[in-house]
Image 1: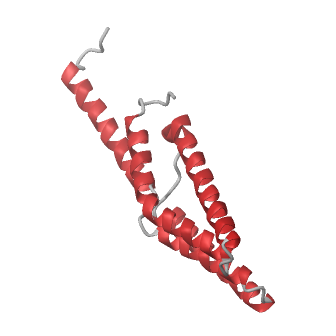
Image 2 (image 1 turned 90 degrees about the vertical axis):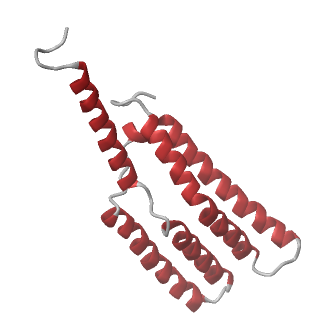
Length: 159
């Protein structure tokens, strides 16, 4: 039974408006393009500071990493309002993010251990640089994929 005065066309228009607003929210909450190389660079710099085995370099590197990470994450949260709700990302999106992180960790460890086995200097930094490069190369495609996941989910949640 339909409400008086509500036509199928007006209902379709309202539903299209809801979809458009959801797309705006999803686009506004995505991580910006500069985040991935910034985070990768911070990770590489911090790892290099650790590998120097010089206490003063480690201290300066740790403070710089903490300040840099706070600045990067703070800017994303404040300026880009990156707060994706679980009802938008869904189980599939959450699993995608978890797998992405695990692959990056495996890449970093694998590359670092291979560099150490090969006798290369600064093996952890080499592993971190590989991962930083991978994050820079794959961060935007990940965000595009997650945007597609979020915008194709049924309105009102679901899996």
